[in-house]
Image (cartoon, rainbow, N blue to C red):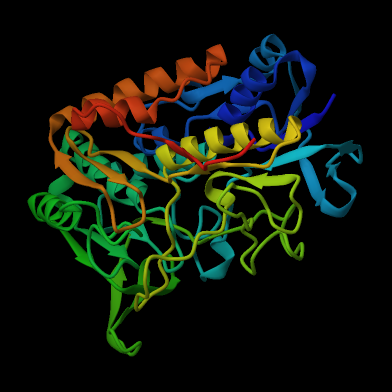
Amino acid sequence: MAHIVVLGAGLGGTIMAYELRDAVGKAHQVSMVNIGSTYSFVPSNPWVAVGWRSKESIEVDLAAVCKKRGIKLYPQGAKRVLAKEKALELNDGETLAYDYLVISTGPELAFDEIEGLGPDANTESVCHVDHAVKAQESFAELVKNPGPVIVGAVQGASCFGPAYEYAFILDKALRDAKVRDQVPMTFVTSEPYIGHLGLDGVGDTKGLLESELRNHHIKWICNAKVERIEKDKMIVSEIAEDGSVAKEHELPQVYTMMLPPFRGVPAVRDIEGLVNPRGFVIVDKHQQNPAFPEIFGIGVCVAIPPVGKTPVPVGVPKTGFMIESMVTATTRNICRLLEGKKPDTQATWNAVCLADFGDSGVAFVAQPQIPPRNVNWASSGKWVHAAKIGFEKYFLHKIKSGVSEPFYEKLALQALGIGKLKDVKTEKSSD
């Protein structure tokens, strides 16, 4: 009997454990290691931050569903991956041995890399539900005492969709509170242009998002390097193509939400051969680490080079469809290893995104996520807001019930009206 351990119980880790459990059956043991037993639906955090959702409404206790599915849950979390020993050092001192390990930890939020950044300093965050709860408290104060607002993503960030979402959701919430006319808003981003998204755009995301920002009276600054955030202002350098400072900005603020840079979590950081200098897990085309072939990586924790050179560092997002594809490929490759065969399945890294704007939104499909693409589509409308609500309800139900059904491919099919999107590629094999 092999022991397969999934490290992390976020979007990727939870469905990874479910899919492995279905695939390997009772012949093998599946365990999941996480800090706590709670799954939190991160895409709903922008709604929590303006009081449209409660923390409890987007959380699932995984203890019961893991017991039902036959997945051993270790809620004490991991202190360190002992790659050479094929084991995890857990936070309570226990050592957990594995035959195969899937790392799906997500990132560590590197607030400390910019002075004044983060919920313990001078900005809000929607990256974690507890941050969103604090942001909601600050939002209530903003309604009472309106003033300048800044929303965006700093240099090194690799997840831009939630920044756009929150800017428009905040705009809607302020309009509902009838104080939007007293709140100047600026979108500050490290992207080279609006709608780049770390993907060099998808369809006409540049035109769509620029139009939405103008229509909502939100100014913007691109190629932005945030120098520091003080209690009442943000200092920003606008960087030219040659790397020089084209313009310096001193932006007043009473409420700021900036997405931070990401790095690998301490449990994997600085392990030679396993991670890159930022602590992201190195994987090959089969999601397998070359130095430690019994280790696989999926999701935000995986190392992906940026899409081209930009004046300010911009990372590549790992979207839900992309993660789902990684999960399926990893499951099939581990099953082949259990059968004594070589991995043969690749994730295609497609992207499907629903960006909610409070009462409308933008959707896009990129196949594959990194250009050039076979499908390069974007659209906008009120239907996106409704679709995002439906997505939230479905996904939370999926997590509660322990279902490993792929959702993003179905969403892409409905959006595009096409017959099939392959989420994995299988190489020809003589096995």
